Length: 215
Image (cartoon, rainbow, N blue to C red):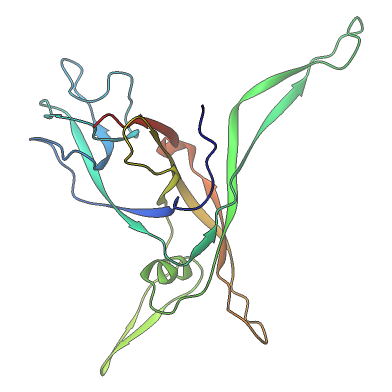
């Protein structure tokens, strides 16, 4: 029977990019972003292109010319819900002999949503997202540090079916995104919320991954 997945035990992660790797063996179970691929005999996935991500699923030794950036994933503890929707343009091409209107489908989708959570003072990712909209000031004893406002892509990984059970299929979405809005509600009673809107960046090669668990 095909599995119907729920939201429980599936999480949103933020990936942090490490230094580029150009030689040696990749670490099984680690996510990588492809930054270089040799034409001759690449060890990287045959159908991949620059910018794609993949999870190392076995023994891979980089060939000369192959380059990857490893990710370190951090589970975002402040997150509750992760709305995620996609849409495409359609173009009408109806002619007078059609019984109903006719359309052709655009080949570029837009993927976006608003991630919901709670404001947690000590959380580094909360601060990182706040820095998209204003300067953040941190204190350490007598030292006061002002950060600049930041821009750029955040590498989100969304677990759709996180599993280690043999015979099951792990499913993850790679959602490289910009953050475009932030709501921080302060109610009279109850928790303060932390909700931010995101839009996926197509140039960073977003993708959905299905990985059978065999061992």
